[in-house]
Length: 96
Image (cartoon, rainbow, N blue to C red):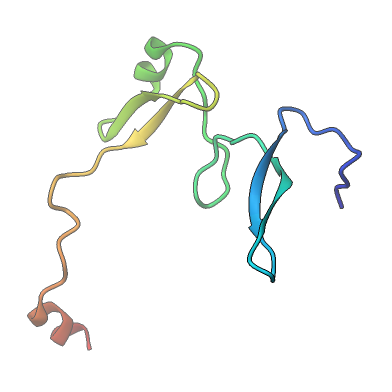
């Protein structure tokens, strides 16, 4: 378990307001951890030093983008416009 005395690389403190039971607000320090380059499932993204390296490693369905967190280049899967269509009634009826 982390305590406030242990330093964390890249962490910083910010102050947030918290309401008190009597209606007043107080400023409370909050530890902000640095953002990481991880996918939603927790896997660390592969980072490339140059855009050329990332373009050489990409496949047909990948895009190259520069990460705002680490400054390296990552690959992202392209999506077709309109591919997030809602499922129609006939499809839902067949699935049930």
